[in-house]
Length: 134
Image (tube, rainbow, N blue to C red; front, side, top):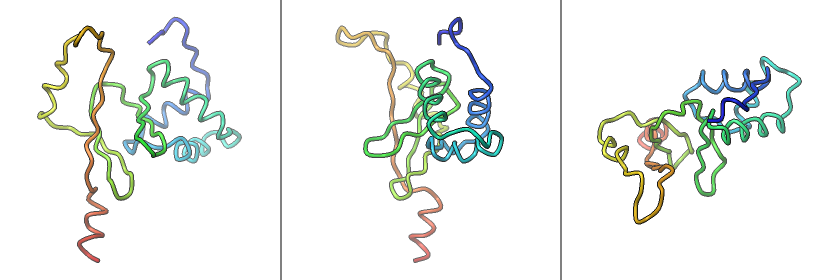
């Protein structure tokens, strides 16, 4: 993160605080709906632009899943996600079985490793309940 060049405007501050206050990993559209409660005149384009900028600066994490809308996470600490294949909901994975993946060496096959990501897939409790009750 390049803190010497980061300028947190009021809009960015509200977007960031809103994102950090939820654990739902919202899309830009969903976050826009939340932010509008505090900033009624903010535009969707402004939310998109600021999320992209904050992602580039390492302030937020962009979760990109093939064929799906990007989601954003206010938690930039290394962690993994699980995505529901039915509804697209994304949750944090909090368990010890992934600890070894965080011990990846700095270089592999001559590549300088910059990071890694892993997404688990499953069916969330809500969708699972719907399947059982139908």
